[in-house]
Length: 311
Image (cartoon, rainbow, N blue to C red; front, side, top):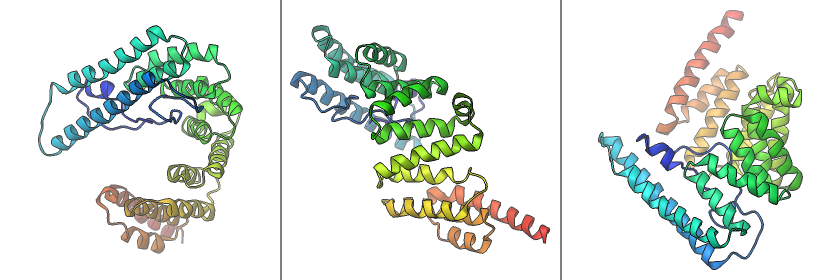
């Protein structure tokens, strides 16, 4: 899965590496192909070129960002270079489809490519055409769910995710995506499913939990699940802490572990265990966590004052 939308971003010279909120179908290449198939070598060559172009453009963006940390530099050629790099890939897909118009893997790969370069509406049109031809393919339903969710139309996204899950109930990706859209768009989920806010939160939590059972070593999934405990009322500090402790065991480096320690502190603050919270905050030393650490320290002092005023 590629997370950059370079054409969309860099045409305005905002070279930011922003990950997409919802995930596209994992595949053996850049395309959204769920089933294991034997891909035409000619098509595979194009997919490989697509991947190479994405990696190259990502490097251009990272280099641009690194340069701008120390110099106010504008590279007027960068958007053009990106466009030209991807235009060649787009032409290769279109040439292939001209003589292989019924090749589902090629059409999926092409739609995925369009989505990756920010041409979401064109990608959605491709997915809709394919969905009518292949209504039992969960990839298409999931990707259309992503499209509507990212466009801010969660009520349209819900049924697509539901259909994807119905077709592939053990696919973690679809469970995570529906959980995310329910969690983020709670008001819309409440209306669509006729739920209270707490019931909508419980639904998101249940979806994350089911996905976690299927993929117990997923750090991002574990942190998503742990986050939900902050909004469940009454706040259950023991379950929240246990969820963050589980995520801690999956962290891949000290930076991620210190990020989890911040949540240990947050849980302690909410539980009015101020001295324990301060102990955890003192353990956070990485620079990228200092802004949140400062916010939590301020919150700690405010809550300590309020707690003392009650006595």
